[in-house]
Image 1: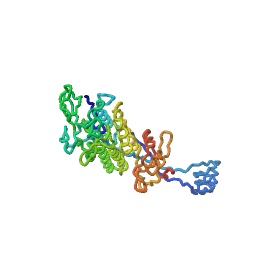
Image 2: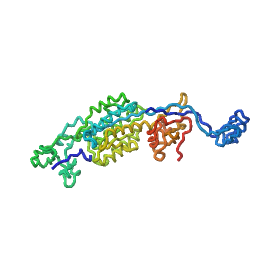
Image 3: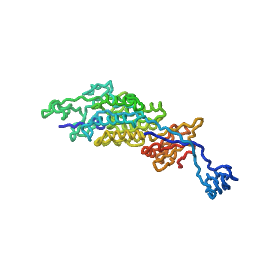
Image 4: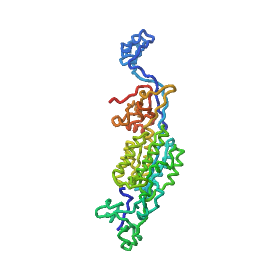
Length: 498
């Protein structure tokens, strides 16, 4: 009887931003005497003789300059100008982006891509990441790297029985028997199997290892296929599931291009471990922890975590060791990690890149859930039936563009002056002329007002350091030159009227 083995376990640019700072015109106007006889009062009839300057609500009659709300009588050459601010433009700085990449090197990364049987998922993904850090467009951003899973030094290199694993067991060599449609699904006990099956230690026929056998029931395969032998497997505890392990980068976060040599060295030294499981929870927890530590030490940077994986979470932390992910609650716990990272202080966004084959039907929804919790968008799904290297590189480029587009630095005021956070405005020109964006109190208001912005800290509660674009604006920023964004200081902030 043939055995088709499945993966174990089956459930298992440059930027020029302008600022305007000045005093604002009064909304009611003032009496300013020019060369004429009189100047119009705040709400009066306006200037009556040539040269008078009317800033009120009335209309000038003879050459007066009216900056009020009324219409000007231009018979003497007068003109009407709306209330407006004018001032000095200063250059802004965008928020530098740093990313801590957590890269999957589990055994399934050795599988060939459907688009090219000669290229494994690992070859395509590692090439894409190498290209990304070598790209001059990435210069200036910070990148750090760790891989997962990392082996547990206390575990035996292999096992054929639970006894060999001890406290780090069980040995991962069981499957539901007999196979159904030539498929023997991995299991840990009979509850994982159909009623007609039992969970057993599966062997291979020594004369043809494409045939499997129930090693607990038979010592010899039929059809002259030789002895039924149990091949080496790994203990469930062969993987390190401690958060601190993954919070310790193999290549520390540092700015490109100087950082690329260290990152490439880690990539070249990493090889997917056939049979290794995927401790997504511990790895993501470590990635967020390291990103938060870095962000706290670099408050003028935007720091994100990038989870790059080719499948579902299969291991979780259990005390000082690992346990197998078996329940929906285990998946929800991983999603909650991303939620906590985003809501924390400092806030760490999690982006997810999933390298998914056509048979991984459950993976996209779960990875989307993690990404939605971590950054408000879906995961970047790389389809293995297409060009994996190009898709993975496109995903990294998109994350880079999103980070650089959505957060702007609040500029320092001029020497000797104090910045009034109630007198800051943002305008965006998509090529059709500048449009003033309104301000909302927080990111929670972006759902109802996507074309808006908010401070990273409520000015009444602390000192903002960043102006953050709502998702709708962020997407537009990413499509245009960031020089089309202007920040104006000194004029009352335009806010959403609810």
